[in-house]
Amino acid sequence: MAGTATVIKLSSLTKRYGSTVGIEQLDISVASGEVFGFLGPNGAGKTTTIRCLVGLLRPTAGQVRVLGLDPVADHRRLASALGYLPGELRLYPELTGHHTLRLLADLQGAATPRRGELCDRLGLSPADLGRTVLEYSRGMKQKLGLVQALQHDPELVILDEPTEGLDPLVQETFFELLTEATAAGRTVLLSSHVLPEVQRACGRVAIVRAGRLVTVQTVAALREARARRVRLTFADGLGPRPLGAAERWSPRWDGDRVVLLVPPDELVTALRDLLTLPVADLTVEEAGLDEAFLDLYRTPTPEVRP
Image 1 (cartoon, rainbow, N blue to C red):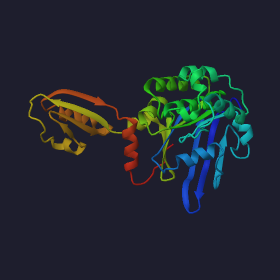
Image 2 (cartoon, helix red, strand yellow; image 1 turned 120 degrees about the vertical axis):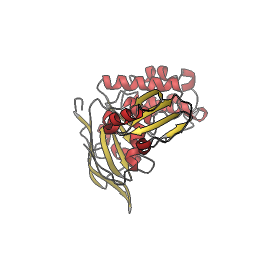
Image 3 (cartoon, rainbow, N blue to C red; image 1 turned 180 degrees about the vertical axis):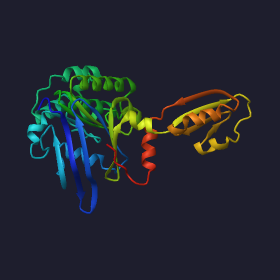
Image 4 (cartoon, one colour; image 1 turned 30 degrees about the vertical axis):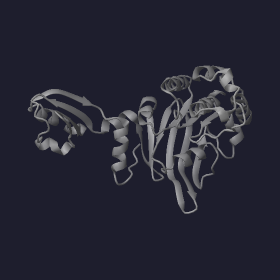
């Protein structure tokens, strides 16, 4: 499987539950070595798609290929090359952490060359691994889930809300692991509600809404196309005042400070007009992925862009 240029290929993927549509006509390709973001609100179809990718669901229509294989028909062949952390991690509470990792490795049929290293880096001590999962905190369970997803050094890792419950230091270690994985040619599909994390880690993202694809774009392109955040501080101490034509850019006042969201093609004109006012300080910031995400969700009709 090594060297596969396209690691994930979804062609018109459709999954229905009776009359309910989970995902419909989804087309996505993920290349080797990418950290690819998969975004959408609850009920958008993310979990359905991920379960089709790992072979837990059979599509109603369309085709799924992971590392060139059918996740359902070729599940045994695929298992050792795939790492998966579900969004709702359920573990056997009576097993110790050590027994949990060993059981899951046996089910995957893979050696675990990274187990010890990952436990050390994520802060799971031998004493921790000797305790039952019933005694684990939420964060410890999440760390155990990350170890089981990565311990066999898989070619593809699918992570659903991977930083849930992790403290900030462990989150930093997680991002280091992502960087190392892609440097080694591994591929990661990352689904998360924490958009700054997606912005930090991912080169491209797919956004789904109501079971359909809204867009697939680079994070940079999504942010570039969205409004700029212009922050102004006035020097005259008079507080909020009419801004004339700039009122159309949704001013949000806080004393003598105001924030405007200005479309990129109007930015030069906006700055020229605003600087005729008694401005003490002005900054311009690119929109974050969270603003781009919300902007796309405000559009009434999904628009698929390559």
